[in-house]
Length: 314
Image 1: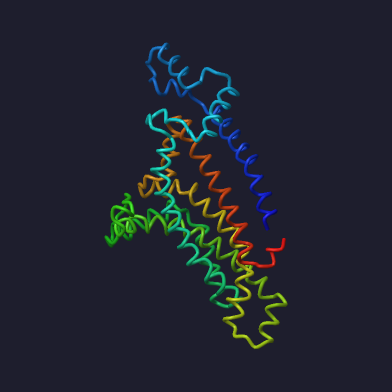
Image 2: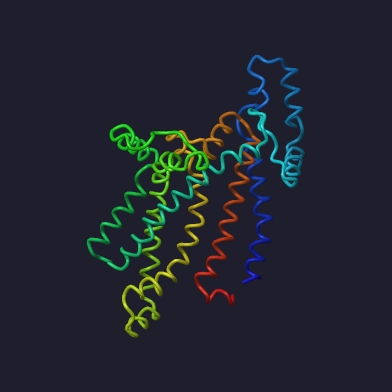
């Protein structure tokens, strides 16, 4: 167990280094001059040159990269060129919003997807199975932005039950916070629920056909015990992997949903940064997102061992 986790921890360093190279390199091929954008189209060439010197844009690309990487290793993600604020501070303001939205969406996805997958597998080739598959296919097919707009029209405009947009923090007013995030959380969680449902169904069908399940039934155990305690526990191993990856995808894929519901989160931050050529913000957001992905994968490895004791000796 320790050896496996140690190897995964050692893989973190080259992975993050490769991500940093890709992020920095792709930024260089983007069209437009950030100095010209910051100074304005009619700015004096001397002012533009001064801005380029201050931002290290007049140095060779390898020198710029090493300078940027050195700051990151010291915990400094730089300053936003447009907002003139530390990138770490901006991320600290926006990330909790997206984390709350992602956590709510993930809970909704688990509450819908896993039970539907188990039920679909247990009731295979019945109308209930067909209905679950149809719901899952619908969740994968419906665009999130369209679903968000339809929910705003129904629950905000027609029924007046929920606010159409905006965000209130949990610390300020938890009831208002839940009211402003429940619709975008459902929009995000809907697609993830469909994915979890399909994978849970597939894993459960495989688990239910194993010898240990037939043995449990032969011993006279109830069907609920066989399904939940024996089959589901082993079927959850691939679902845990998928869940960890999908939660990371929620954080980076909430861009459209945050735009539709006007939520000032992580997605909106990076969209504004890309349009304004605010390289430090884009780079900082991508590096933080990559770190979260890697952390979630390490968490998935630990959960494997917790769920399946046979892996503890590996």
